[in-house]
Length: 103
Image 1: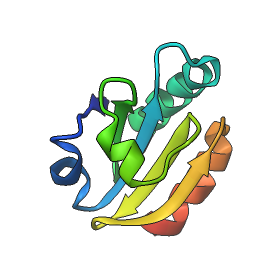
Image 2 (image 1 turned 90 degrees about the vertical axis):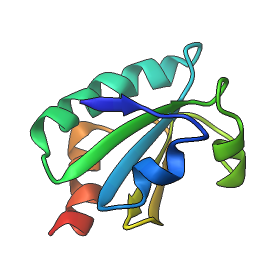
Image 3 (image 1 turned 180 degrees about the horizontal axis):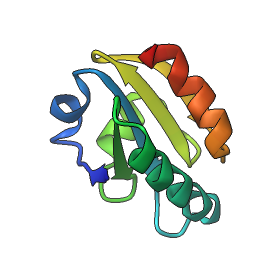
Image 4 (image 1 turned 90 degrees about the horizontal axis):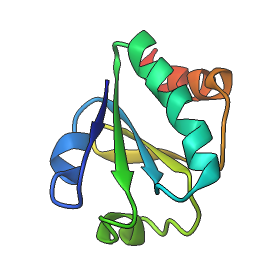
């Protein structure tokens, strides 16, 4: 399951373990392509938490991370950003990236 988070809940939701956050917007075509890939990964990977944030409704967090394009995926491990992935990525590409932090 991919959990919808907000500016207020971001720090609390992403401070422990490996967390992938999808920064997206309803009007973004590539975001709509990326979302099903992330949903599928969330079903398959138990050792990663998946979250998503609507950048239009929550502008503060994307701004604090310098996110200028969407989709952008942030991977955090124990509260530290370890990867920033911009643009659409396949399931295989994301699995490979996440495997670096869950092994």
